[in-house]
Length: 499
Image (cartoon, rainbow, N blue to C red; front, side, top):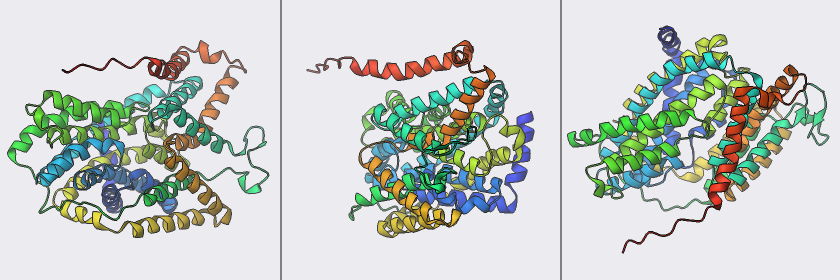
């Protein structure tokens, strides 16, 4: 009942004319960046961080939430009409949805993706509404040593999951942790990794790092692979479904939601695993398995629902524990820190207006997205024809102006260019950027919990094995490091003889 009362108060905050406008701007912008290949919600939120510094926190986060959900909706349009998945979780949608579009069923593919996203997003938000406060109540009791161990678990699992190589993920993580250490140690007053530069005594602006690695690096990488020829499938009329499509879609929507939400809430669970699980499940349960790989509507409905449900799940550990489990969540955490807020169990007490206004805006944003995506599908499809060079040039200019406006510092621009080149190199040589971002954001927090735990135990390191919850989480961390290496050393299975 408390959650319902708080949610009603949140609707009061989210439904003010100004916040409704920010929500509309967010979902429109999110759909726009979701449609355009190479630009996702994480990059967009990163670009907007300097601009939104002067906004009220509630309004800024309502807009960010709209961008986050909108990006999920818009990504399906690109996958279906252009056969270009904007992110790994959209690969299945591109596989089946584009085949449907080539058979003249683009409208049905877009509709099942949009309605499935709406249903999954709404159910996921309901679960977030009731689970998040309960988890926050429990999280208050967690000691600093266990919080440090949880961050360590997030570091390890996220490094192992993002990208193709756990080693590259860990290298990326340690790069981020090193960047997070630059500046003056608040306890000893010693300068760390400043190279004698007074500009680095206060540390490196997180926004400069994020925009450099994400926006500049990603833009340079995508632009370097730009090809003029694009085979965009034309769409006649809005997205719509026949009765048969409804009958074949509603169960995959629900099953995809059940799979997606818990995976999103787990550290490194992400959207990829539930998406592929959903596809496999639908292929086994379908009465038309022969259509899979040729354009089966269940293969679009289930994975798209799983993708969007995981997006709601990601907000559970972010809001209750301050743990980001995706790239966009990491940047949202940085946005909280920009406003001097620390996500975690106390956020529900100290900033309840913001938290419940944000959750209520997810319900509103979902409805807005459905209304925007079904009838306006041809409009979004036309955005795929925008010349990419103009787009990339605009991102570079916007990034540069945004970073310079923070401190009016040329030194920040030099750092931006440096991190942009590093970001391009990481993408070029397959080093995932997300672990580096999470290392920068969570590194100082992990150090703070580590020091607090040692202070409470008078410098006794055995606190990390004596405290039961801490010891258990550290054991899981050890397993997360060892098990993948053991599995990798196992000989490959004998090829199955189909003759």
